[in-house]
Amino acid sequence: MLHVVHHPDYVVPAKGEGTFRHDKYARVMDALRESGVPMTVHVPDIMPRAWLEAVHDPGYVEEIIACRVAAAKERRIGFPIDESISRRSQLSPGGTWLAAKLALRHGYAANSAGGSHHALADTGAGYCVFNDLAVAANRLIEEGDAKRILILDLDVHQGDGTAALTAGRGDIFTLSLHAEKNFPTRKARSTLDIALPDLTDDTVYLDILKRTLTGALDDFRPDLILLQAGVDAHVDDRLGRLALTDAGLVERDQIVSDAARQRSIPLASTLGGGYGADRDAVARRHARSILTLGSS
Image (cartoon, rainbow, N blue to C red):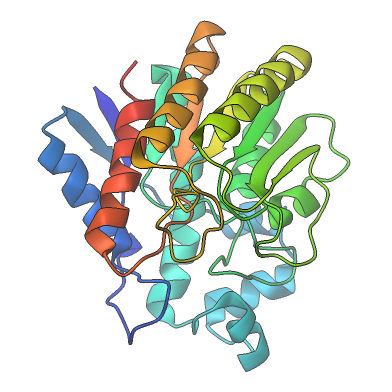
């Protein structure tokens, strides 16, 4: 049984023709249902304000909740913060936390949103408002659900916000495989960064992932993996610079799933990036990622 966390308010009506389309989450759920795989959908709650403020600056949290965000900061985020976006931004971290709790029980669970790895302490950036990965990891450790968490970031863009928000913590290991010349221009320092050259293909990428992930898991020995499973490393992605194929993305996720299962490590995934004019194709890539991760 596939366990997926989703809330109807993840979906916000599309406004204009921007790169980030807020209807992606509905399309992913449609693709999952069309697969015919048995699935239980779990509905998250809004993440409590105190949990957000444990990682983000309280003033910034107030700006988002009150929908009073300066225009310059909205430009950095990539879209205006209205009531519907504010609500989704509070729901998404709750979804990642819930997916992790379900993974601890069932072995694997997915949040159908999340992966907001560019959000920093006092601002969002790159279509990210609150950093659900850092917030959820912090809360899981505080509650005693996990002692050591690996945040594995396979988005084509470096997880700079996650790295910055968890810097110096011995109980959280951040591993980012990303395109060296892609956003953000100024990278943060993850526990381990693997910066890849433009047009890195399936063969090279998958070999590096397998070797790097094996070393990180065996050395750090986490008791939970939070995966940012962005699909923007695909060769056709509008904002990507790598050259993974559909088959390569499937094998990528199979490598992660197999590595977690072989070590009996619970795995929770978040959506992350995926951009292109064919929004259904992007949604199918995200859905295929969840199905691959949950197939074992």
